[in-house]
Each structure stands twice: as C-alpha cells, then as structure tokens.
Image (cartoon, rainbow, N blue to C red; front, side, top):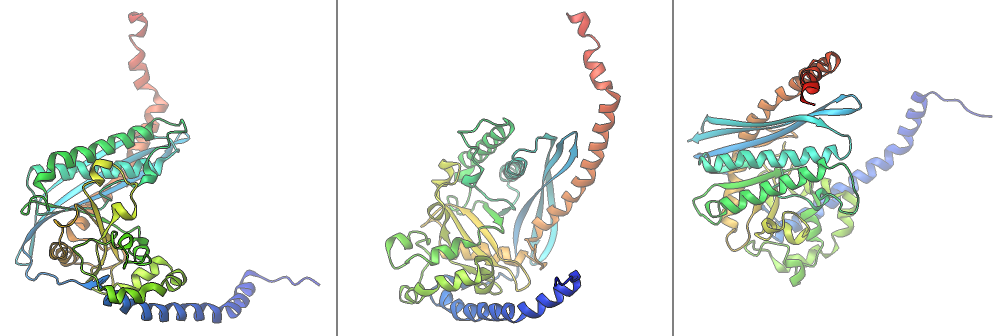
Length: 381
C-alpha cells in the first residue's frame, strides 16, 4: 500500500528524524571552535585592536551600487558610486563634502554581473582619484576590492560580446593610472598621505588557508606579513586544525575565531592568490586581513596596497582601530559611517532606472528619435 502524506505531515516527520543529528553537528562545531579559537590567539594570528578615543580624523566613504531592469530581451543598467566626506573632531561628526559618478546604458545578458562589478571598481577609483587630488581625507574607504580577481579577466580563447573585454580594459587602465599617478602621495610611501582602504565581505578562507600551511617553514611564513609577530612555538598546535575547519566551514570559522574589536594577522594576498590584476599594482604588494568591529557586526576583509617593512603592525592597528571606531552602527551589513552615508545616496538609483526604462519604452513606441535621425537621409544621399 502507498501512503499519501501532505507536506505538513512530511515536514513533521523529517523534523523529528533529523533534529538530533542537526543539534549534534552544531554542538560539535561549537566545541571545535572553542578548542581552536584560543590557539589562533596564542599563535598571534588573531589579536585585539584598541580603538582611538577621542577620534580626530577626516574620512571619505565611497559606496557603489548597480541596478538592472528588463527591456526587449535585454537589460538596461545603472551603475553609480557616491562619496561622502566626514570631519571628526573630538568625536563630533560633520559632513565635509560629497561627490558622485553614474553610468546608464543597455547591456546584454552575457557576463552582466562581471561587467557591473568592473563598473563599480572603476567608478570607486574615479571618486578616490578626485578625493586624493582635492586632499579631502586621511582615510578613503572603498566598498570594493582594490585589485581585480583573476576570474574577472575575459577568456582569450572565446570570442564573445565585446562589451565585457572593453569594460575590463577600462577598469584595469583606471586602477593602473591611479596608482601610477598617486603612489608617492599615498601612505605608506608618504607617511602623512591618505590611506586607501578596500572593504569587502568575501574571501573568508584566506587567513584560514594560510593557517593550514606549515607556518614554521619559509613557504608558509611568506604568506604572513613579516612585520606581524607570530608565536612559532604556538604554531605547532595548529597542525591538526584542518579537520575542525572543514567540519565547521570557513565562513562560520571566521565568525568563531574573531571576537569584538579583533583582527587577524595581515597576510600577503599577492602570495596567497598571486594571479590578481593589474600586475604592476599587485607587484607593489597587496595585503589583507579580516576584522570585526563589534559583536553584532559581520567580519569584513580589509585590503591595503603596499608591503613590509612600510606596513608595520602599529600602522595597521591604527587604520583598523579608526575603521572600527567609525563603524558606529551594527548589523550584518555594518560599514564605517562615511560609507553608510554614501550608501544612502545610492537608494535613488533603482527608482530612477525604472523611470528611465519607461521613458525608453515610450520613445521606442513613438520612434520619434529615429525619424529625426533619418529625416535628412535622402537629401544627404
């Protein structure tokens, strides 16, 4: 006989069958985190950071956003970036300026997510360029990566829509031009220059994969920034953490080892992931670290361009401490205050693109623009 069950009955049965196993796995992961997290602290791979108080600084936050809407089998897209400048004097915060950039056009479905990601990086650098020239801030936060991942490079073996290679070339040129023109004006090459900080939430596994290397050997230690002191004796205890990391998962593991106002040791991203672009910027050095500004905030990845000995532990602690102090609001998407204010400016992009899409559809129906373009065609021929 076949038994017919409703979905509610099936869910009830499954919850009773799988509940003990789910609870058991989660408890084991918690025990693994409680066992391994102190080992990372003892080894110097996780450390506390002091936040400055009072805060006296100038900071700029650059936020990016893109939106699409369907039209005639394709998409219209809008990609925008906004910059908000803040002046903080003895914890008193005031706005000191703003800037923006926008790009609106049609786009094919092919590689649209990559093209929009490239547009975000390019526009962020354009606003950062103007901020450096105008000497707007000591800290300039970008909510994008500072260099491009190798996955963004268009495949040379496949001929496709030309828009994606063109977008990649434009973004690469923008990044190269920025660092070629401003490198000597920026920290750490200029001790009093502005600091360019890239903030992201991805690549959680970077410090975890570095920890799984044998850091007692030269190949393993080359991933950790030399100016970051690590306890080589305590590193031996990390030899058996691989199974615990695989069982917990990299994202959950980073959440577990990072407490409030802590950061990981800085690691060389150009050694950990050497195939980043553009090459001449990556050769300057790209360092990364994970930090957590508070218990209710998500761990974030911070990127900085440069290398040891220019980037010292003290300099990194200062930048991370200021970043934590400027992250005044918690939540899953917590970012420094200037970035949050810039993000609010971008809320207008979606409604504007919808209005633009309706205008485009109306013009296509009337075909008035085409009639104007072709009105003198017969006379010209």
